[in-house]
Structures are given as C-alpha cells and as structure tokens.
Amino acid sequence: MRLTKIILCLFLLCTGVEGVSFAQDILGWQDCVAEAKTDHPDLISAREKVNQVAADKSIARSNYLPQINSTANQQTSRNTAGIKSDSYSYGVSGQQLLFDGLKTIYNVRAASQNLKASFYAYQVTSSNIRLRLRTAFAGLLQAYKLLNITRGILKLRRDNYALVEMRYNAGSEHRGSLLSAAADLAQAEFEVRQSQRNILLANRSLIKELGRSVFSTPAIKGNFIIVDTDRLMPEFEAVAQGSPFLQELIARKEAARLGIKSAGADFFPQIYANASAGKTDSQWPPSQNQWSMGISVSFPLFEGGSRLAQYDKARAVFNQSQADERSGKDGVLLTLEQTWINLQNSIDNLGVQKKFLAAAKERSKIAQAEYSIGLITFDTWTIIEDAFVSAKKAFLNTQYNALIAEANWAQAKGVTLDENQ
View 1: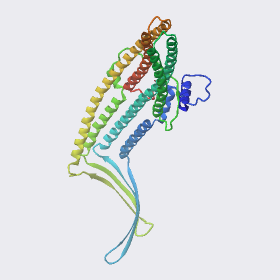
View 2 (view 1 turned 90 degrees about the horizontal axis):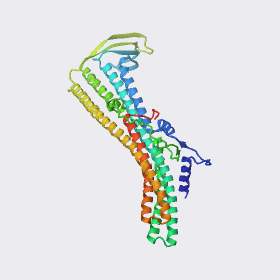
View 3 (view 1 turned 135 degrees about the vertical axis):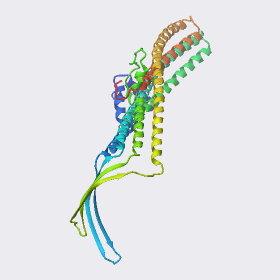
View 4 (view 1 turned 180 degrees about the vertical axis):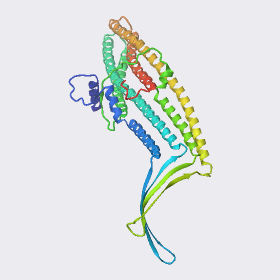
C-alpha cells in the first residue's frame, strides 16, 4: 500500500496536479542534461582521460627545455697505507638537447593528435550518455503515461463489466460474457499494478544516467514532441565528417603516422650541450671552484635489433589505424542512414497510429451505445473495445519509439550533452 501511495504521488507530480505540497524534485529534459554533465561518472572519467593526455603532451614538450640538476656529495676513503681522506662537493649541472633526429618534435606533434583524439573520445562518451539519458527520460515519461492509460482502461473495464452484469441480471446476456468481462477487468487491474512497478524500474534507470549516487524519486515534466522533423535526406558524407567518432579515428591515425617518424628518428645520433659548475674540497664547506662545459654525442651501435622492431611496430600501428578509420567511416555512414530512415518511418507511423486511435475511440463510443440497447452482440462489442485499448497502447509506444528514433539519429550525428537539443 505504501508503494502504491508513493507511485501515485509521483504520478500526480508528473501530471501537474495542483495541491501537492511535497514536490521536491521535478526535472525537465534540460535539467537532466545539466545534472548529467556535472555528475555522470562516465563523463568524469572521459574528462580526466583528456587531462591525462594533456599532461602527456606537456611531458613530451619538456624535452625541448634544459634539464638542470643540483648535486651535493660527501665521500670518505682510505688507501692501502691506511690514510683516510675526505672529499666534499656541490654544484649544478645541466644539459640541452641540440639534435635527436627531430624525435622530440614528432613526439610533441603525436601527443597533440592524441590530445585531439581524447577530446573527440570525450565527445563520443558524452553523445552516448545523452542517448542513454534520453532513452531513460523517455522511458520514465512513457511509464507515467502508461499508468494514466491503464487507469483509464481500468475505468472503462469497470463500466463495461457493470453494463454486462446489468444485462446478465436482466437475462439478456449469458454467463460466458459476464466471465469474459470479469477477466478483462482483472487484466486491467493487473496492468495498473504492473505500470506502477515499471515506474520504479524506469526511475532507477534515469537515476543511473543522471549520475546520482543516492537513489531518489524525481518526477519529470515533458512530452513526446519530435523536434527534428526535417524530411529532406541529408548528405550523409558531410554529416559523417562532423562525427566525433570518425574524427577520433582520424586523429589517432595522424598520431600513428607521426609515431613512424619518431621511430625513424632513433636511427640518428643524439647531441646534447652539457655544462656544470660547483665547488669541491677536502673539508666542508668546499672552496675550490670547478666547472665544465662541452658537447656529447651518443649513438647506439648494437641493441639487438630493437630499433628496427620499434619501427616495424610503428608502421603496423599506422596500418591498423588506417584500416580502423576506413571501417569506422563505413560504419558511421551506415548508422547515419539507418537512424535517419528509422526516424522518418517513426514520424510517418506516428501519424498513422494517431488516425487508428481516433477511429478506435469513435468506434468504441458507438459500439458501447449500440451494445447497451442490444443492437450488437457481446462478441462484436468486445472486439471493438479491445481494439480501442490496443490502439491507445500502440499510440503511446509509437510516440516513445519516435522519440527514441530521434535520439538515435542525434547520437549518430554526434550530438553531445553540451549541445542544447
């Protein structure tokens, strides 16, 4: 009973019934978007991944700058004659990269492409979350409206049962019809209870996509209006170029291409300028100045073939990324066309189901009047009534499916939580 009261309260909040003073959390679509942008753990994770890659770029860029170290040493030694000696020193040393075959430059450019790819990956995550959030929002909205419909059907079934019972008691209807009407009434009562339970599940789904860590029971406000009603077929190739998923693959391919150049730079010598300055002495504090400066060149003569293997690996990574980009583009184009067609079909079907509902409603009204005066049989009447009930549910499902089709089309285009749609 307590659960039923909670569901009823939520329903009253959602449908805007006045006189309810305990409304705590009534969310519209934009409210849900704003909350998910802040609190969704998947989006936070993707944002931190961007921060990590940004730090990797700074690390790669640091090789451009001088590397400076400070040292301080104290050493005690004794020779074979047993004479003990002490030495103290401190100083500063540094080195500056002069040439490394442009490896550092390629690494920094590759890091820039990886940063761009991580940003597009963040947008992909945001777009996926938006789809799940929109689906959850529409699901809860559908659950509330279905509860309203099932309550209306329950009232209809009660009225119908009363009418059949009256005719049965008058001797103008048989017991089979009465039992059928009673079964329809029991079915309607069950569907109301089922709708109440479905609201709880739909609410849990929305809470998850909002990113809330504590379960709550927000009411929602909204409708099933389709915003994207453009019926002209778009240029899918042009739309695909704006897809963050495809842009991520392109950026990763560019990073892999620069990775080949970076691996090739390992075949060049590394040249550094070195300098140091400090003091040394046999007692503390040391007083004798010492300094040095020069240039160092290093070039590995043999390392077991690791440089060749690294270069081959880099080329394989690039070839893989090229294939991934081509496959990704084909997949994006297919998804775009599929989701656009599904949206157009859903919009068309919405108009059709609306007409079916209007026709079923009118037939139900006429049939009830005709049955009450004995112009049609119970079997004919129940067929018409069942068709009306089915039409009401079908129209709600069509509204929900159209909203989901629009959400899928938006996700295929790469619409994110940051875009006000």
